[in-house]
Length: 357
Ligand code: F6P
Image (cartoon, rainbow, N blue to C red; front, top):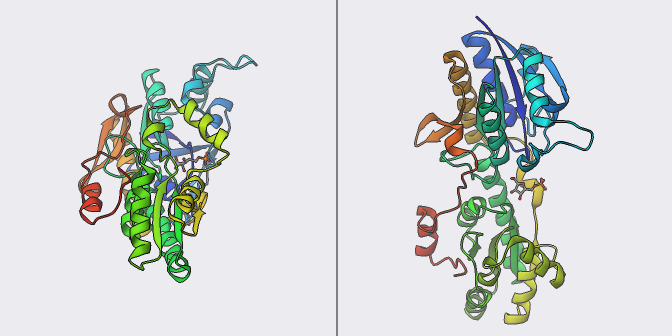
């Protein structure tokens, strides 16, 4: 039986998207009579009817390629039901494209927002399968998302390289790692990079406590310190504020990023020479690691198996060593912050790493 599959990538890009697309396509061609339609630029393409019919050849040579061959965009879930000024009803438009293309299934590769919209479309009656990607690793129900481990490798390499300058100059280096709501990437790369201080959004910090570690290292003639700070890190006071209030406070203080504020505060409190480093989107760029190539491929192949079985309304996940799937309705919109008792948090504490609390 012929099956027409639409594939889209939505939200921020990450390494492994192409490997996952390739996994879906290769297994689909292998397991059944598949026709694959690539939807351009995420849900934007589904709304606008922007797509390309694809053939086997187009999925060749993309395993190691960073980014996404389909393009991506951020189409916020909160606006999905909002009718545009030009009268466009986005949900109706997506359903129309699905119907016009005579799709049997839509595979959506993305993070939290993508999964919320995937669930909405599933509840609207479309056959949807999700694949969890994000360097933030914050999708509920899966041990790891693809893209995360590559980003950990990149962020760890950044910390390693900064380490040498920190040691040579005896400086305090504050490295800002991506992750606004979840600190997984900072936690893993901080531990892997031997950071002295790790600050996560989930564990509000006290700058005086951070300063103590930096000061005692300076006194012991280990004149340098490495701080791995999540972009969403916040003080205990800020944690009590609403997001808007926090943003207003930072704007008033004239800081564009958290690492520069911490570097300035540590210079004032301890007298060290501090610098902030923001690797930014480098953490999302380039070729996926071997781990992510395997995981993306496994996720993609599992999605193709689900299509063959006609099992929809789910997203693929990793549980221990097994590739499984969860119902979209059970995971969409559920946060996955770093728990206070996460084994890696406990490891960090037992190593004497300062978590700022
Ligand atoms: O969700 C992935 C992520 O890289 C976050 O870590 C970061 O906060 C955000 O995307 C940055 O988004 P953008 O690429 O839209 O600036």
